[in-house]
Image (cartoon, rainbow, N blue to C red; front, side, top):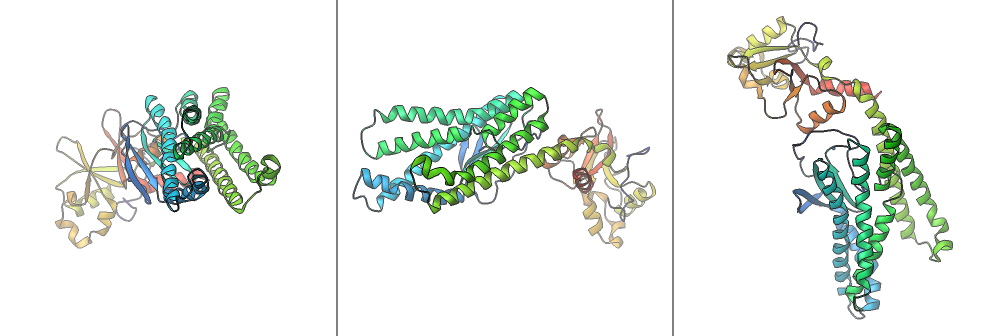
Length: 406
């Protein structure tokens, strides 16, 4: 409760979420509540119980692919007219199915190691696998990351073999395109820089050799930044290296990809620096002193008792002392003072649903992730024996989090 409502929140002196994306190094437990589907995405199915989503940007890239491959289709099958673009859209779907295979391999390996996978999303630049926690060990990080590029390369090699036995025509064009695209996807994703899979492979190797996950992330982040700078220089040497003249489309594509690499690497590095400060964030010192009351007590009397006890929160309990709910600060503030004597405290109490009771010993990333899994204004902190320690307010955690970041 706020200072104005019950008394100042106090310490307890004598009383009370590649390339695939993984929320870098965030630990969690199993049984994570699946978050709401992100805005701008469409769910198209599931794989091994994992939601498969596509973003609205996918439709744009599908059209671009259809236009780009149209001349090749016309060359192989003249006279198709507008149907060549329909064939191009079919190829775009097949290509992204192979991208989905790449992402599904990340997801399956992550599940084999005991991690929860929230979703697989196909977007403008490829795909992203949302895993509910960062890797616990370097070898987990290595295998979850490397399996994606290896899957793409294996798919590309298989397509090359199929190409030799496929007769001339549209099917052969599709096989040819899938072979080339998957080999490129696989090789480029092994570039040793975040946020690419190769960056996570590099991170795993440095982490395993040094034992320092923070340093490993920074090294892989710098790898991503260097890759972005190298990519920006490609248009300068493209014509000399390939004999193909650089076009405006090439320049735009390079700039988009370089920006993706730079921002992804920078975000990972910033997260690693913040993560190093998180161990100072502990639930116990942030807990508000708590008063326990029966749920049928008038609200005015509950508030009076809390103020007398200098408590920052109120918890309703049964006759035997088992906690029932947390009195919501916002609801108390919204209740007119003149009505409080006639309203039971249960009217402004949130029932202790699953996820609203947390161990008092939580700290660091575990504390932040526990709160993010089950968003609420307040949480009940309990000891190992089930006894009430205090109430943790999200506002207090946010304030401490900001202080830890500076």
